[in-house]
Image (cartoon, rainbow, N blue to C red; front, top):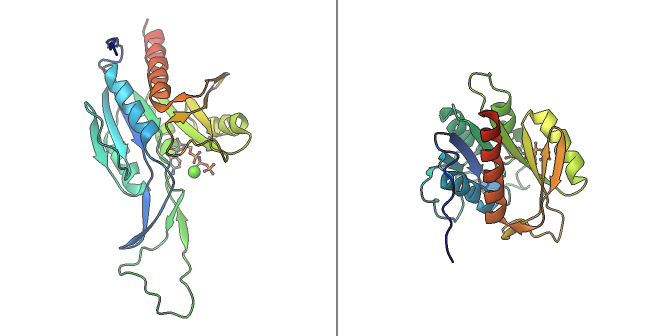
Length: 228
Ligand code: CTP
Ligand code: CA
């Protein structure tokens, strides 16, 4: 297929994209994780880079190769993802596509838990930092001009996404329906709604690569509106 070169309309812009799951250690051999292949986040990093942005991809453990032309930082747990993102500020664009584990085990066992006790162990959980909210609400000097989050919902998809938009303080949310049968996780396509403060766009089901290209195009348009 012929490749149409993309306009370098994000040249000079810096972006951070989070992707993949996080792994929260229970002990040296076990962890808690979310389902996420990283396909959507990696595709977004590549799509922004294809338009000339300087991209840092902060990814949890995935089996995907590092996208070419993107600086990739590999992390395991949510707290490592949080620090890696803040270390890379300031940027113009932040896209949170990672499926961050909401909880970690409060105290990681230093040695492998053994079955020797009478009862199975009880795990005490602690809440992980909310990376998207922290970036959205950081001081104006460091806050990216455009902060985009994802919302994985199983019901009332748009209403929940609108609530998340305001509670997290981000600018846009890409909401996707992950209810049973939608085959979003690990699949190659995604049906999303782009939710902004004053509009909702329903995008048709398309490949994750196409979702990424369309998002990158919208991001470039937002910057080019602002600067003309
Ligand atoms: N997110 C994040 N850090 C967290 C949790 C979520 O950065 N600790 C980001 C995700 O990358 C995503 C967005 O927040 O862009 C929404 O994630 P989601 O799991 O849908 O929302 P939560 O706020 O965690 O709410 P809940 O899981 O209870 O629906
Ligand atoms: Ca969550």
